[in-house]
Image (cartoon, rainbow, N blue to C red; front, side, top):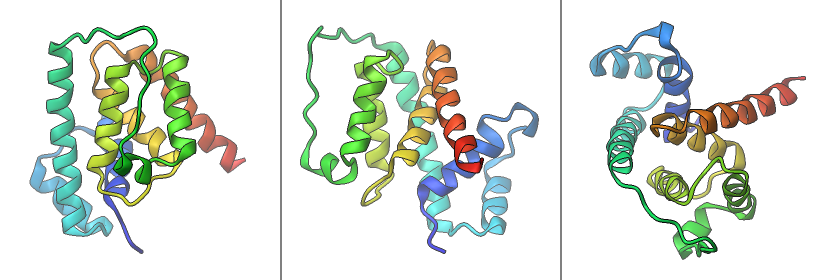
Length: 160
C-alpha cells in the first residue's frame, strides 16, 4: 500500500490532535508509533514538517488582519489547477459563500494542499485539510465545528 502525507496527517489528527484524552507524545515516540503502524519514514517526516509549518502559518495569520475586497475573485495558478480539480475548487467557493472560510483562510488551505506535494487530491482529502487548517486558526471555532459536522456526516453516510 502506498501511503502519502495526507494518510499520516489523518492518522495524527484522528488519534492525537483532535483527541484531548490521548495526550501529546514527544516527537521520537510519535515517529516510532507511526513507523510501527506502517507509515514510511519519509512520509512521516514530511507530515511532521507540514504540521510544524501549519502552526507557524496559524501564528502569522493571527497577527495579521487582511482587508478583503467585497467582490474579489480567486484565479488559480496552473499548478493549483492540476492538484485541485473542479469539485475541490467548487467546494472551496461554497465554503467561502457560507462563511466557513474567509479569503485568508482559503489561501492557507490552498497553500497547505500544495504543501502535500500530491499530484491531485480528492474532495474528501480537501475536506480534511480544511478541517485541519480551521483547527489551528484562532477564532474559527464555529467554522471548525461546522466543517467537522460536514466531514463526519459524510463518513457516516458512507458507512450506512
